[in-house]
Image (cartoon, rainbow, N blue to C red; front, top):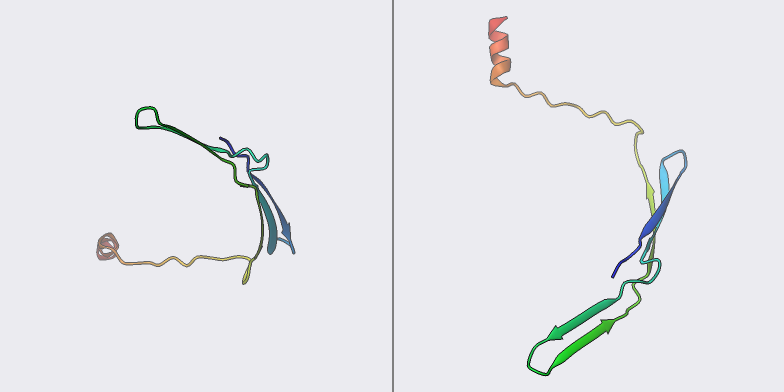
Length: 87
């Protein structure tokens, strides 16, 4: 049991948008085997071969400003109070 997955992405519109495509189980190799031994002279064996191949397509777009500057919150701490008291 193994799977080979892959994907590609292309940026568009000067980096503001992107189109992506991903693939799952490219070689259709995901096969589930189940073997069980229980009561005397009773064996159970199951092979499940469903179609696990998938293709996905995604589109993303960035709204707003290109540069985002995070404002730092400044909370006064005890050490800041001490610095102010000494100065």
